[in-house]
Amino acid sequence: MGVLLLVRHGQASFGADDYDVLSPTGWEQGRALGRWLADQGVARGTVVHGGMRRHRETWEAMAVGAGWEPAADIDRDWEEFDHAQVLLRHAELTGGVVDHSVDRLAFQHHFEISTGHWADAGPDAGYPEPYDAFLARARRALDAAAARPGPTTVVTSGGVIAALAALLVVPAETEAAAVGPVWSRFNTVIANSSVSRVIVGASGARLLTFNEHPHLPRDLVTYR
Image 1 (cartoon, helix red, strand yellow):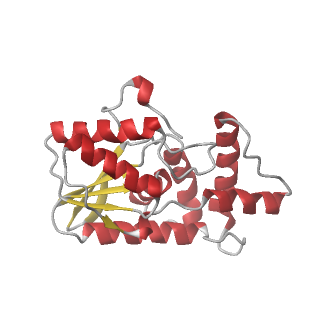
Image 2 (tube, rainbow, N blue to C red):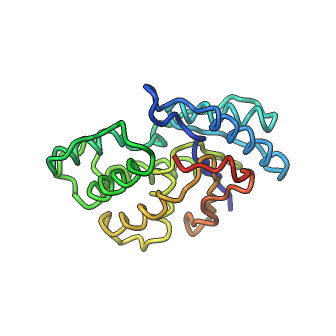
């Protein structure tokens, strides 16, 4: 039986020209997580991250904090869904507009409505990556990580971790439309640089913990 550590990236640069860059807070979150993992005696093991810059930078910050070798493997199945495309397609379908100038709370409200529609819409709604395809990709990433020998740490995004958490707590025969509401609830509360643990054994994968972030003081806890 093995344990996978699923790490959400540190805070990215909301509102900047390039979102896919860690903010100064995101870098500190990553370093704090690395220090905490080392203090807890967590072995480095195999490290995998998605192909996004915020995934790589979070791992680099973790490696500095823990004093670990920074080399890691890349698996693009761990990349986040394209939220900009989801927002755009939802606006096209509803006659709305995507306003990138809104504050975090207003954006979060719009984000939850748009992604909720994406999860319910089915494969023929014109989204570049349908929700069921996103779930299948997340599951494929988990299966590949579980097949690696020894302890494995994965740095990925909140949507992917929330998808796997939902898939692991909802009955396997449940359709994607039923997984969506559970995914949405997980996705709205997962903190930047949090750790979720998945046990992998002969009976398959099981969710052990979700959204651990004791390494963060209150002033470093962020969700977007």
